[in-house]
Amino acid sequence: MLLSKKGRLVALIFSVICLSILKYVVDYSLETLPQVFQLIAYGALPIAGGLITLNFCTLLEPFSDAERSTTFHLLQQISEDPARNFFIGFLATAYLNFIRPPLVANLSFLPYIEWVTIALAVCVVYTMTRSSTKELYVNSEALGWREHIQKVRREIGPDLIRITSVMEQFVDHGVKEPLLVYLALHLQRLGKTEESILNTLSPLIDYQENARRHKLYFSIFIWTRRKLAMKNKKAREDLLRPLVKKINRL
Image (tube, rainbow, N blue to C red; front, top):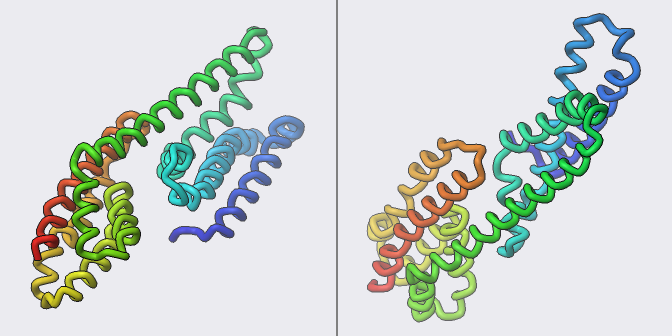
């Protein structure tokens, strides 16, 4: 069951408190504990760090659909993979608490290496996300997406903004329900029967099974995820193109 926004915030605060307690125990009270509790504290500390990253990223999810700029596309990439977010937080906490301290004692230039690594990582993620956003719109135009929007304009007139929005939700994010409802109402206004509406919209109705099958694929590498996202988007465009043409002929 998905948590509400308030529940996510509470979970984040609770994770921070747990991390603070565990950090204090590991730094100041570990030697006074039995060995089994020492092992538990060592293991729970990176887990708490992973939960903090996971809960924080889930709070970014509502912002990922607010706009269609590169920044909000980056927020979407960050918030959409809970397993990756937990793994990153887990590794970062383990590094900062268990690996970094002995390295700092022997490598005085370690902070410079860390800053350069962080800067390069941010640059790579931003560049790849920006490139992905550009490809999203360039591919849409190259495939004649604007032409289909103009054809729908002649059919629905004042509702152009609405139909464009629901089409973009489906093509960009795979959210088909608003588009399905809108097209069904549009066909009903044209006087089509229920059987005719179901037959016309059957490709869009059946897409749910394909979308679930695509979600079974998992990869932690951002370039693999980006390639899969573009492939799925292309499949949605190929599905919607003939459907719009068919409705335009009615």
